[in-house]
Image (cartoon, rainbow, N blue to C red; front, top):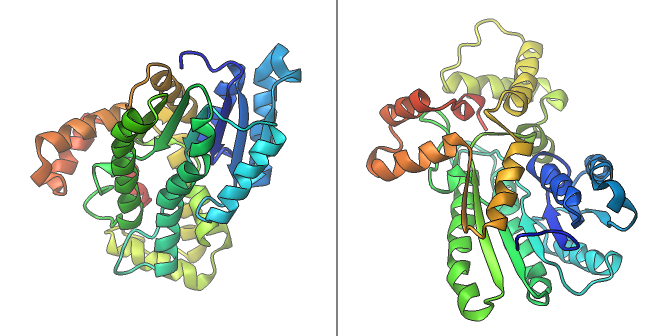
Length: 327
């Protein structure tokens, strides 16, 4: 699929970050876009950007928005039905299972509900999205499924001082599932292709959005919540000294903003790499120099991948900051 013009693309998590940039760049290529997100407000901003990008095609290009939580299969199915209705179609050509959140890293210390919500969005969101839209992909003359995993799909860590179990477990599942589909599609749906996207640190609002979804938005935290955050940061070796709760709140807000604004790669740059990979029909798309370095380092020393020495090699080669942000 070397051209996206007049195709129909489905994108989950289209309100911000890579989902927004995928939508914007696809619209600029003349592709119709159907997106879902939990935030209608964010999606309307994305839609406005898409319409601005579409230029002369704007009158004929369809950009639709749908509120849906991808961890709930009934909402994903309702999203699919709305896409068919609003785009007047029984097929789609591209499906980007992009939505994700991060959090609840410790199986021991973190709340089970938050842990499972993280896992459900990041894994079941991909599975439900694939199940729901696969018949529509198969109905097209050619189709491409794009599942977003992460470097945490082959390295279950953000550093030796931070537990990262829910997100990593989900992203490993996405990686295995997507790789298994390569052969499944070849055997049983040869007109379909699949790509696995593994980004490193990309400048998105995932930290901010995850806090909102999981009920841990620093701006809304109570004093009790902030005391728990203080204890967690202390366990991670962060010296807070005599910082007040309000100072801790501001520090947490700044962490989320720094993850978005100070990343080594922007969401727009990441989306360009992903779409180039789809055009080239590559099944494995590493996004970012940190992702490439991590991939190589883990392959070179799998036994040492969770040691401090490994982290030192990684930080010496890349601008790796994720572990410092407690995602």
